[in-house]
Amino acid sequence: MSAAQRRATPLFILSAALMLSACQPLLSGLTLQGKLGRAEAVWEKQGPASYRIQVRCGSAWGIETYTIAVQAGRVAENSAECAPGPLGPPDCKVPDYRAEEYTVPGLFEQVRQQIERLDARYLMASFDPTHGYPAHISYDHPQIYDEQWACNVVEFEAGE
Image 1 (spheres, rainbow, N blue to C red):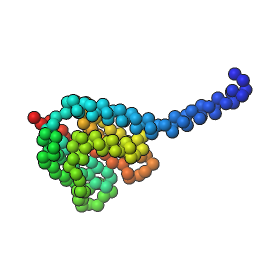
Image 2 (image 1 turned 60 degrees about the horizontal axis):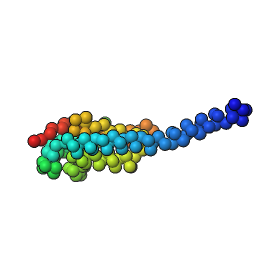
Image 3 (image 1 turned 135 degrees about the vertical axis):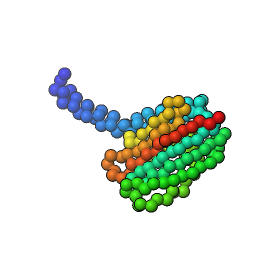
Image 4 (image 1 turned 30 degrees about the vertical axis):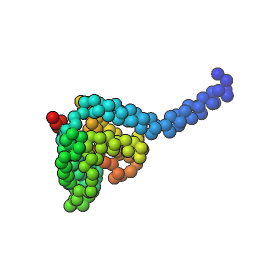
């Protein structure tokens, strides 16, 4: 190896590392996008048309629990309650919501929108292995103190 090549090697390695790290958000989003697609395929194949789901979403400011009953693919009943978060006021009010956002297709759409909107490196989602629905969605940017949030399916009951 010539002297010029020896001098250029560290620069090449540094350049390659910087380019790969710049691609990390894109790669994270693509990885999650692939998991999302596979989970949606499982849901389409095995997911029930009728079910009851309870989704708990929270941040430092408050926690909301949404209970949705779906019959033949449509919202039949819904309710929501809230609890104050550690940084929120002692009294809470459930924010306006659309029940469809907390159905399984609505949760899939939330993951899709968050992949497009947020820095995907800090977005996490896991999916139920049996039915494919999003079991957990969370976001936590390490350089921002109080923006983290999470939604978890705390109950899922397949209907007939």
